[in-house]
Length: 129
Image 1 (cartoon, rainbow, N blue to C red):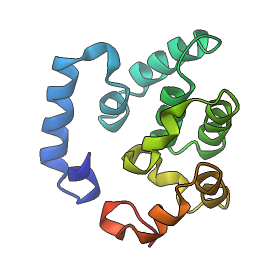
Image 2: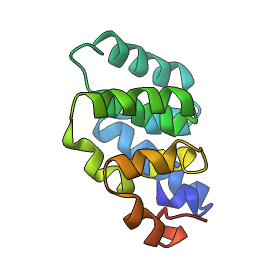
Image 3: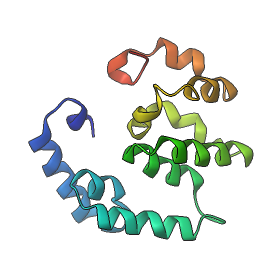
Image 4: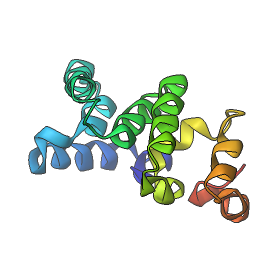
């Protein structure tokens, strides 16, 4: 995904097409990035059907990548309520870049004791602009 951030779109498209071949059932990001919204929507619908027992963090990732910030925060809040340890890796997730400018981002990081680390990260690694 870094190639998309760096505007190397041709390489990014090739990478996403390769990802689809390797893992077609778990390639929601590739589908969405390639404009296959129907396939991405189908993947998300399946995740939501399993939401009671499913992975709220993965659902938040899908919404974050799609830029659906309110929904992403809704599922991240669910992760926090269930005391899931998965938020420990949130700073390494490029899919959450769309959340960084939202006023809820820093309080969320503060709740999981990651705000200080994020504030020290360089922008090219996902730190504040």
